[in-house]
Image (cartoon, rainbow, N blue to C red; front, side, top):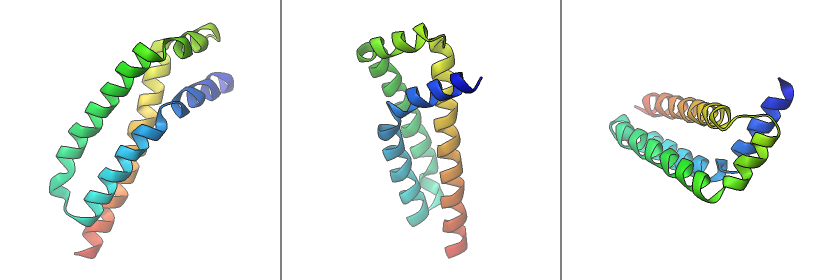
Length: 104
């Protein structure tokens, strides 16, 4: 179990930078403006995740094959890493909303 978690985190690190940039931009805008922009950033985040999935599937096939050979299925890689990314996004967004509401 621990080995599988380390492999999933290693896979997540390969595309986390791009996703976390989007998270940082969304959190910054929500914290500085209003909660009204949140639906736009939710759609934007979902679109970026779909693009990351497509790019990794097309251009990172060897990387996915590497993890498959180590015993982690592609479905497991994507579902756990996307869930982790979504959890990070939710935690950061809730913190930004709380900050925004405390300023008012």
